[in-house]
Length: 84
Image (cartoon, rainbow, N blue to C red; front, side):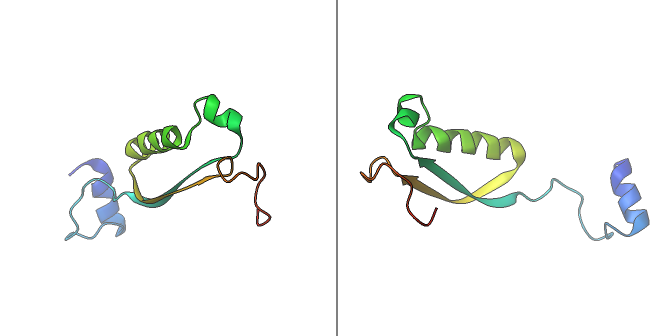
């Protein structure tokens, strides 16, 4: 048992029956979007954004539940939808 677990047990923050271990991952959704053709050309494509999100999540102990994406470039409007 390390010092922090000992202190938690003394203060009642960690019950004796609870095993000390790594923290549970935070759950999150990944969202990627592209709104201009220039973003795709500069390496900010949706797949590249998801790769960066995955790298960050692995380092930060974040569990990605699902991924969502939106490309306003491919929708042909060239502008954000009115709900934005």
